Length: 269
Image 1: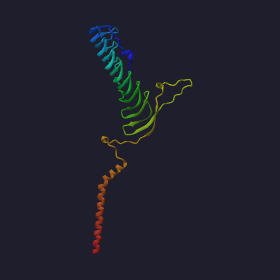
Image 2 (image 1 turned 90 degrees about the vertical axis):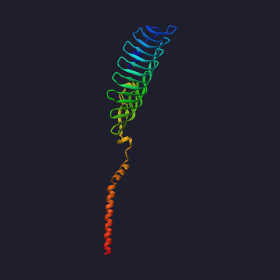
Image 3 (image 1 turned 120 degrees about the vertical axis):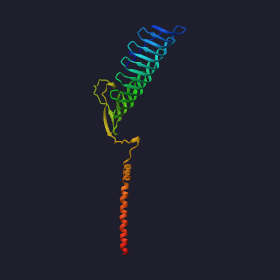
Image 4 (image 1 turned 60 degrees about the vertical axis):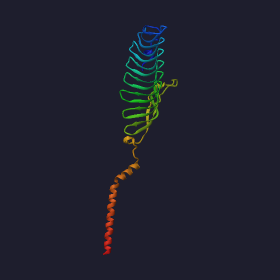
C-alpha cells in the first residue's frame, strides 16, 4: 500500500509559488484559484483565507493526483487519490489520512472495501483477490486480518477467527456439496535457544489445520426448505404406496365375501 509520507505529502502552501485566482481584502488566497507550487505540484480549487479549503484537485509532480475535499490544506471529507503505481483510494479522509469508509484498489487488481482508521484497514471490511476470486470478509486491526471472518473460495469457505493475518483456533470448512469439516488451526512450535527473545508474530510459521470431524451431509432443497426427517420420509413413502396396498386389501375382501356366500349356498342345499 502506498505510503502517506512519500506520495501524499503536499506542499504546505501559504503564499508560495505562482497563483492566479481570487483574493480577499487582506490579499489572501480566497475563493477559486490555481497555484503552481515551488516543488512542481499544482492545485486547482477553492481557498479560504490562504488555505486549500473546499473542493479541489492537487496534482503531484510524480504523477499522483487527489480530487476531493480539503480543510485547511489537508485532505478532509470525500476524495479520490490516484497513486503513481496504478492503485486508487476512494472514500473518507480525516486530517490527511484514510479514515472512515472507503475502497482501495491495488496495482494487481485486488480490492479492499470497508472501514479505515489512521490510514490503515481497521474495522469490518472485504478483501477480494482478483486472481482467484476468493474474498475475505471480516475484521481488521491496524491493517491486518483479525477477528471473526469468512474466507470464501469458489466451492468452499472457511469460517473462524484470524490473528495477524492467519486463521487461529476453532473453525470449520463448509463445502458446497453439503458437508462441513470441523477442526482448529494450531500454531506450529518453533525451537529457540535459551537466550533468544520471543519470536515476532509476523515471523511465526503458518498455523496448521487439524480436522476433528466431518458433519453429516445437509441435503439441498428448493427455496430454502428444510429436508424431511427420516421418519417423515418413511411416512411419505408409505403414502405413495398406499393406493396399491388399498387395492390389494379390497381384492382380498372380495374373495372372502365370495367364499362366505358359497358356504351359505351349500348349507341351504
